[in-house]
Amino acid sequence: MALSIPLSLLVLWEVFSQTSILSPRYFPPPTLVAATLTRLLAGGDLWGETLVTLNRLAIAFVLAAAPGVPAGLAMGLFRPVRYAIEPYLALLYPLPKIALLPLLLIVLGVGEKAFILTGAISAFFQIVISTLGGVQTMDPRLLEVGRNYGARGIALFRKVILPATLPAILTGLRLGLGLALIAVIAVEFVTAKSGLGHLVFRYWQMLLTAEMFAAFVLVGLIGLAFTRGLRALQRRTLAWKEEIGWQ
Image (tube, rainbow, N blue to C red; front, side, top):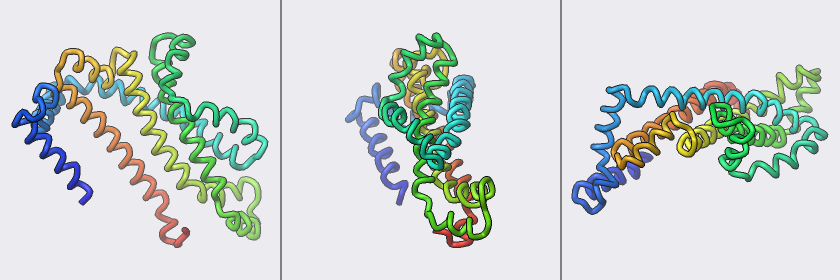
């Protein structure tokens, strides 16, 4: 059922393109896009650009997650920290992070640092907010139970707080990774001279629409793979909650 709508749209696209209801020059049929993607992958044309994008994404995600999770936990657990950081968070979170790219290019110069940091900033705020939300919505009865069993300090954090907030943390990581991918592709499209985003832009300039859509599909498949992978990790990590019936 979940695949019926996209499959129907692909069939309609194929029929409309083959019958020239949609211009095949601008909307090549999905079968041609699939054949083009296969050809580009077999020829090795996409692998190098894909590795560049994946490398930027991986570094950006680590730079976002490493401080993002502790910052969200600290804001949730310690009110002075939340009061100190929350105004800046509220100010910067709604801002499209790609809008920071010109400033980063001025400060860091045109290069990998600015590209990666744009992706990291995009993911950072989502990770912080999700983690903070996980702490704030934690059932206070869990803390009472933990204290009644003698858990204090680090033991309380490790045995009660962290497990209770883990679903929110993993959700924030998953959403943050998606935002980082969007930002990295956008940066490549606008400024970089390598990566899948740059490849899409180059194909568009050359009006190679089948190749352009093939690169689009590859970006989508990367996003889908990471999203499904993190969801699987989340289910595996939180399997204990289902076993004990912890809602």
